[in-house]
Image (cartoon, rainbow, N blue to C red; front, side, top):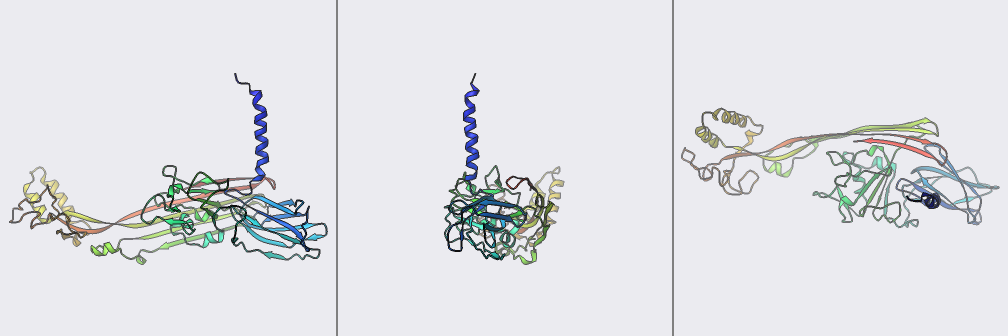
Length: 436
């Protein structure tokens, strides 16, 4: 029997190591952080200054004290808008607004002054020319960009397609895109840290549309192409990290409806060449979201509902028995089979589009026979006398052909329910349920 008493020191050491290591992570795939140095008006660093950070949406407040070199850091911050200020004995800074981006470290250096006014300074969240906190090549999309940028069909993967190094798969392939030539099955999609990859094919989760729905419930997206930082891993292509929206101290919501009308879509070149009318092609993408407080500064709710309904034309060529072949068949089948053949040929005569049908001739066109047998095949009726002076496959076609458009209908529905609770300034709990 194993002596479990000897394992306790190792277990305790492992637990202590975890507790000590936790603050070392500045940001994760769902958070960011802010760091900086506090100085006075002369440029000297200010130790033991108190830094106050406030989330503009939830009212969550965190404080920190600068070190001996005037430095401070707030790790593991939820992406969004914040205000920050600092004060020390007899000194005070202005209140500055800025935005935390997922996976990024914002640098906010504050200056304390004896006569500091309570002026609020807006800091634009522009990408730094040189990212000094890590070596990741990262493209960020803020909530305003997620809401404003076009996403056909509500497909979240289209955001990543705007990042340098991403190539759209326009002729098929693995997933909707690849990253620096690495197949799409090597791209990891996450929402609030949870995988959004299809477990069978390891591409983006979706229904029949192959669209990653849920864009109206996403607040920020980061596309990382060389994920060297320890919070990333597993996939060699790209990391598409999405952070969901939450409720806040103010009720907020939206309604949207994107409509693509079939009359605005042109007929295809190949349909025109075969005389096929334009097929139905329209799309409806609609839904809405709402979020707000359950208890101010403490508990919040969020709900999002999205729908996708579209119809696409499926162009193709229909080949049916020619009138000559129908006559030949009626004359040569047995009495027992005759009613079945007659019923079938009556259906052929009533087929939608039969009025556009043309006799199959030899050639390379869509409605022609490239094998040179007038649509009769090689070992079927080709070379058989018609009984009326002709020969099938020589001077008499076995088929008539016409182009057609079938209607392909797809409907999808996606909804998200989320709740967030601030237990203390350092303890929070979130729950999220999503269904496509």
